[in-house]
Image 1 (cartoon, rainbow, N blue to C red):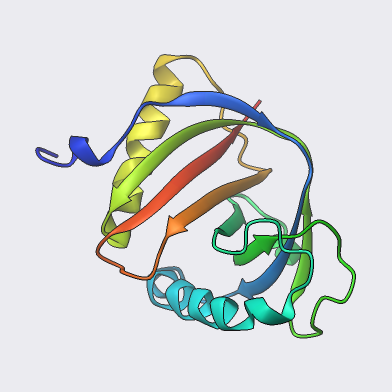
Image 2: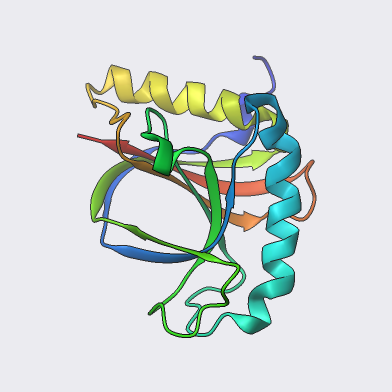
Length: 159
């Protein structure tokens, strides 16, 4: 992994309160997410003007559960909202409960995000944090338009 290390940043543990998210749910074969998530992300960006109460409209949040029950399966690309009032009918509403996360920031090509997760998981193991496979994990995208240079914070839920 030589040369990749510069893309990863310092890790930390943080608590995040309840999040209200509005956006799209993506359900597809595992190898298709890398193609389908950017498409849904662009669709969400075009829909922003119709989403009232968006807190950080230029920040998209991805949410997923590793070991999920069928109703939570897939990947959800959303924006955070203050309240769910007047959300367009074609968007889903998702409430993430307050949780504790191990966090790492990643910059680079979107197809290398898995390497950033491997790096974060190794750090979690070294520091004896237990990953929650049954809880919502988050990806806060600060820049996603250029697939070769995304900037994302990975929020991996811990016990």
